[in-house]
Length: 387
Image (tube, rainbow, N blue to C red; front, side, top):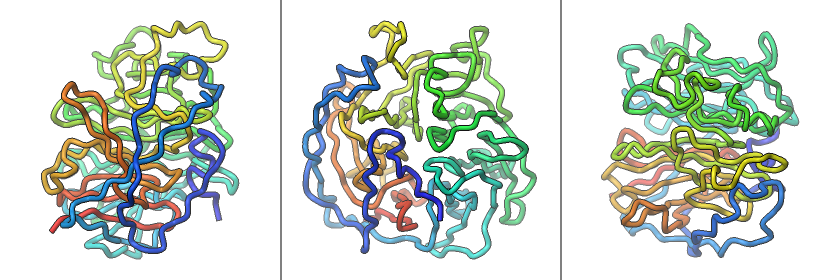
């Protein structure tokens, strides 16, 4: 059996493998507070030596329920929904499963030819999204490592033909061979139809400061993998790059009301962060032995001194769970927890509280307006509903 995703803390520190919940997760009762971001970009290879405040767990209202939605998955890494309500769940070893009304279908939607050796931590199938024009083009996008014909990371799309993925097309191919980690893989379509792709440094740290390659960056591309002409580095490096200087930005989300783009970033020895991604910004990795002035490094929106293992992220903009409306939700692999981050009146991240256990890889709003999240170790999809 392959080593579980994030078993190496997304590369952010020593492994702290969480226990999978034995029952439906319930809200707990401690607190997470905002921490000082002043060390960001100074020396990411050296621990700050500081500890984060104890986490705060916030009870959801009594009419909210956290329930098991689907079980029987193997190392689920990403969620997506089709317009007809079908849920797609990506498994790390390459299979895309279908869940309908909480029932896991035996026949997979698609099986990718992934490269995932037994001792790998974060390779395999880790990213998935559905084209917003799916009803016209039937496209589902997948991000994974493969060894055909050489070891590389690819972004592909498949066509939904009568409920089965067919007609594989490559959109991006990055021929680089990390031994275990840091491919990232978050995918998010913007309202203008452009696709944001989170690409990790693939364990080639200095590549993150080299704008001639896509590694350690957020890409902004069209459906065919080409750079739009208004990207910040067109004519000055890889034109697909939207922001750079990243290590392992696992996932992305967009506030549909403002268009603000957010990412989860995993540091080296702690120093994990939530980032607001700005066009052309340099987020500082790797920082050491580089002549990058601190005032040229974009600062995080929320910063943690200790390893979090920050994974899936979602801006909750629906109304079905009003207690969460306007919150930024993210999964914490270390601790197996679902966070809800609030914003102050100026739009800055402020309150950070854990609202449930059992969220270790991805979180997404369903077409019903409820929140769905994945536990990669137990192979379970959980759902937050309201009476």
